[in-house]
Image 1: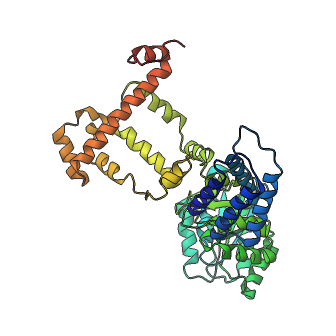
Image 2: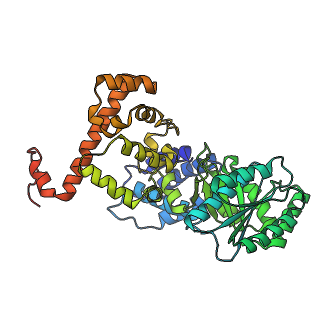
Image 3: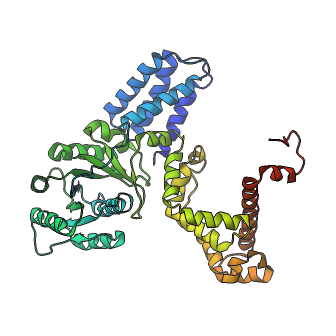
Length: 450
């Protein structure tokens, strides 16, 4: 997401490159290009105009430090305004009432059912809640079955009533069951509806009035661009929802919805869907998203994802094995699985400053590790534990068993050996930096004392 917008903005800032100071002429020229970039990204016209007018006003009224170049100052101003445009700060879900009642609303096919499950999983694993999923879509064929599958995937109970065609009654009965069974969050999955369908809009209004939800989350597909914003406005006028879930932010979307929706409906984006897996739901941080749009990366989110997969005891065991040079292919395989759990590889790489632009045309699929995993799985348990035993005949057998070429096996083994050496040196340096330096080859201008 945002790749085209990022590229266009970068080109816009080049207008100021080499300029000694900010003037009304070069600012106007730069922001004219920025406005075009925003409009091409399907940002609401009024939002784009207000945005560039605000940046221009701040840029011309600012005394630029001599140490800061005009281009750098403009990037800072645009970054701060982008963050404000998308809400400024992250807004958390209100989960204090018991039970917390969350009503999911949106168009057909926007992802309400899937994101009901994602939200349940997030609340269960990160907040220690006991969510109950409620199937209130009594119209779409197999809607109840789909929610049941989702509930099984996330390990949460579900309330269904296949005999009833009254969503209000189903929702009220589900809340009563939640009280009885100790579920502290009730997530009500409703049917998809069009804002122009008066009967369906009246139905969800009736559900809202009956259950008095703590949160009403509008689920919208970010791929629909400006139409998503218009739909959100119509739903908000009727439901007065409390927040937005933007789905498919990992797709080829121009980003107009994310940049416009907060300003148009004055409601925060609370979550973003970043993939098909059930754990692919993130809290929306406007400042971090602004950084990613401008190619600054998002190291904080990358670290947070890594911490979610981090096991302190396992890390200590791994460190001990590294120190003893006993890191093997079993450990390597396990590390690959942890990286895969963190999310889409291209998305992860784009969080590193400067990397997003470098890999924008590179296809990195979820099966990027497929060949490596096949090679490791074709090794015997002894070979995985003792990489040094891999002679040419064993490598030939592994290549045949994994459906790869001998060169690929040799490359993996070589890279693994190099990685083990680096790990060993790092642990040695941590234990005794002086000894490490003394054992290094003589290098010019290399200090020998600490």
